[in-house]
Image (cartoon, rainbow, N blue to C red; front, side, top):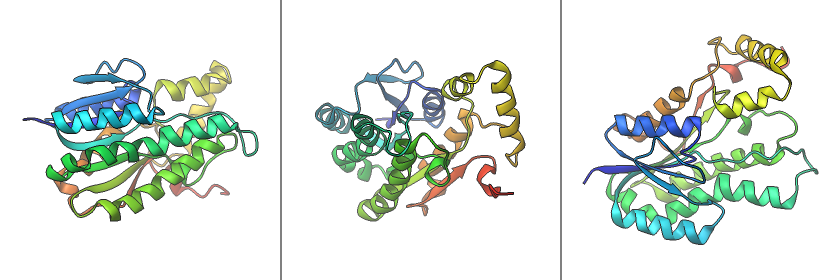
Length: 241
């Protein structure tokens, strides 16, 4: 039986690249999203906030596939600062960005352990240094990295647990964010972003997928509880300089 990789948030730009890389690496790509995941071999559409449905799905996947990895890429990012984010937005953000991966692991742990499996979560540089107006998102990514450290201890030695923390990645979501300021302003912001990045470019979804591939593979067999920052060197720069 061909081993499988489960990828949440599989319909977006990074999710599609993750599915493509999983197939390239010889795995069945099982995509989970609320929208169509065109690059997935198996396309499953559910709401990650629905814990009962997620438990049932995890049990089903563990029965039907030899699971090599869970890659938790799904995330929501409500706009709202401290004291301005609704309780509903806080709940949805934490359930989608953090709790969903723990629920999936609870039901697929046996299959992962049997296949030298691992869990890789897509965090963000916002877990380390952020901007105003996205308090719930930044907090959830920091919590997700805390989960990685704890889960690495709880799930080892059979299952490795790591995170990839991307910087700015050229996806539809990033372009939509820039578009809020108009075309000319968006181009200016992209130019500033490139200038402040050591590698002088915005990342591509494939850059994230390559890092995930490494963490899943045997070359990372002694890596667990770690966060791999994939930001072109953006966070190496002191913000006050």
